[in-house]
Length: 173
Image 1: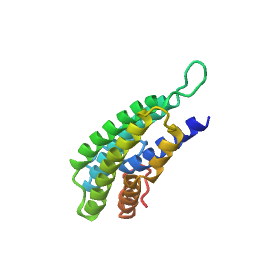
Image 2: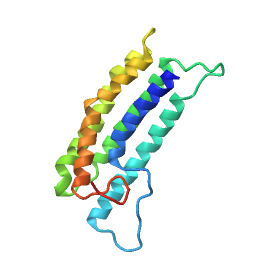
Image 3: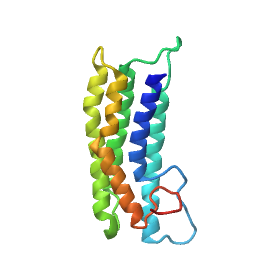
Image 4: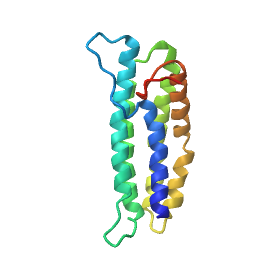
């Protein structure tokens, strides 16, 4: 049970950071022409939805248990984190193609940097999980301290405070 909780906390931490790119609600669409602000928000929301769905799948996979009820070994969590890492790198490539409004250009650059950082910071975690005798709970808890997550959160807060709804809540910071 503790292992499942630790995995949930780890995936939630990544999810919070990644959802900075956008949220789970459907992007608003209209039959009228969208303003440049609305186009930017919609692109960010769509990207966030894609990443959220992958993170949810990884979380679900990590919470799977063996028929005996025992938690899966760290190697399974490592494989799932590799999927997350690959998707984070894809998200970073997609984010790099989204032209931000001048007002949030520095914040979006920080968001992009944060996503790339998290993807890179996962490499030693994955390696540690693959080591025989590693403590997956302890290893996964280290994710909560990732600088990339902190950068992503700060960037998304800055974008929201600038008046952009990149999460899809209908409100800004």
